[in-house]
Image 1 (cartoon, rainbow, N blue to C red):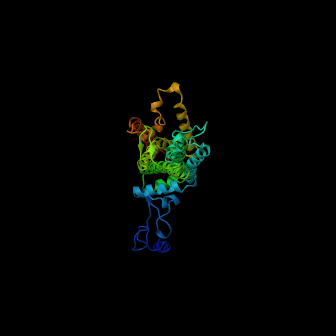
Image 2 (cartoon, rainbow, N blue to C red):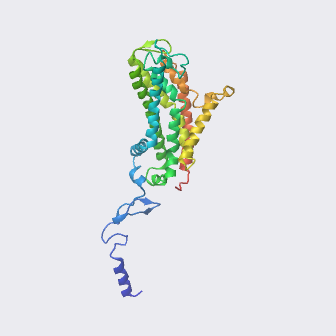
Length: 333
């Protein structure tokens, strides 16, 4: 190329510093992907997607808050919490209607544990509602949220954008599990709070007669109700880990949610078959109703500790399986 042609080419390219930026100025660069800089308009950072921009993973607490907000802003989550809040109201109303003139449940008034004490003390509606929702409603809602945690992102096409952010797969998975556990606690407290409000409106409140026959003050009974709610929330950790593991196996949120709920129903059926009693102590729902031992004086800790230990084992096993699957998974969507 002649000197004239070289000069013309240089004039067409414009002045520069040899690094892709304006002469004498710094190079405009944005986030890197695979060691290559990505730049957006006017030399600014490139947008990697709406989710990556709004859900940054630079700090663990920021990522957790983002996942928490994402979980509780979904209409599906709010609808599930609304259904859970309605259950105690329906139970309390049914008990009120069926209550005979002497303050006892009429014939055929069977139902969840503690239901016969509800008419004498509205605080027992908390225990009754938790006993009624724990076998199905509470774990089903947790299974839906946990099953959708990863698979829902993949189905929506936002999972790869999350992974572009500097969060890392392990931290992202941990944030999703922590957000699911927060939902377990919130869902349990929604049931307990709704039951306490309905019980106070429909029935008298006062001293609490425990299962062992000991009478304690209402304040102590309220403290025990908080302990019961905490025990119920802890009982859902195994389901949360199982749902998260299933969520890493598929790109379909609906399939993950349905599989998790199906496993939950199957395991509970197995837990009711007498011929399979040998495996019952190893099934995660087996000790769920052990929270009733908090209503004894003194408290029976044996079944409660077995339940917590079993849930810890399920959380560790399925949490490790979810981590192994997610960190080695080829994210294409």
